[in-house]
Amino acid sequence: MPYSNIPDWPAVYGGPSATGDIRTLPEDFIVDEQLSFEPSGSGEHAFLYIQKTGENTEYVARMLARFAGVRQRDVSVAGLKDRHAITSQWFSVWLPGKQDPDWTQFESDSIKVLQTVRHARKLKRGVLSGNRFKLTIRNWQGDKAKTAEQLQAIKEHGIANYFGSQRFGNQGQNINKALAMFQGAKVGREQRSIYLSAARSYLFNLILGYRVTHQLWNQPVAGDTYSFDGGHSSFKSEQPDDEIVRRLQAGIIHPTGALWGKGDPGVSAETLAIEQKIIADHTELAQGLIASDVDLDRRALRVNVPDLLWQFDGEDVLVLEFTLPAGSYATAVLREIMQL
Image 1 (cartoon, rainbow, N blue to C red):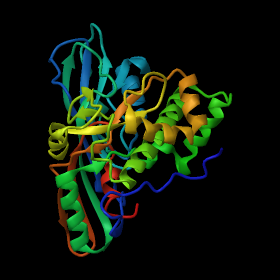
Image 2 (image 1 turned 135 degrees about the vertical axis):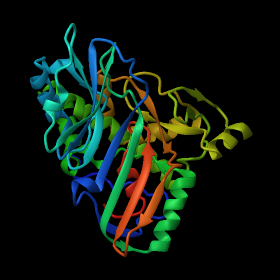
Image 3 (image 1 turned 180 degrees about the vertical axis):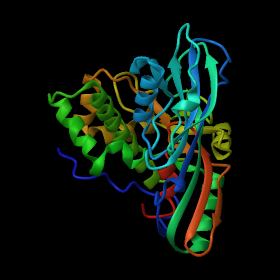
């Protein structure tokens, strides 16, 4: 079946209490990448921490390859960042047996090289501990007391870890393109990856949305698999006990939802029944992912935001600052307090 639009995923804290504009100016959306390791200081790969304004990641990577005189595949990034923003992110350039060029000559009005360091291995996708955000919402209108109450709840209890709307393309068309691909449409390798990710993210958001609606997104369910906050390890529990409940309430562990694909779903009992119900309603997407040889994985349903700060600047500007782990979306915070 064709997908005409992406649902308005259920909110956790009562729904938006305000309206406003984001990304009016690039400086309204500031993102700083945080690596999960410290570069060694020596090796064949030059690591560059670059601040870019109004430029997308792929463009800067292409320009870096041209400037350094290397193949485009010799330039690597840890993650993709928004164009309509000021973002600081890491790039690596493979320069075996070569000295660094004068990176200051690479700079422009929209690109600044903040730091350079060598490392033995290239930068790999996803090797981030997180991203630090500073967001300025202009033309803000709403109930200040209600918004502050919602922000305090987010700070104390976290957010539902939804994939952001950008994952699904304009009006969710990446889902329809994924369906067309599963039905035999030819696509390029990069597009294939985008459409597979969109399909998995859509099914995950549906599972998370179901658990939000039934107030189970941060509660234990029989047969859950839990992930540790800030880590990659997980464990399964057939029946939650007092210790699991305690650790859930403390934000030490989080329930997980399926990133669909082939393999063992990793859950049982009530959790498995919930996920199978969602999958049964979207068999074309689910079977397409399996046929595409995508491995099933799991993702935390909740994200902690303990360093969330906010400030109202006059009557119509709200400034937010917070850190999220790699793979989580700032819009998952914003959608709880305002119409996007």
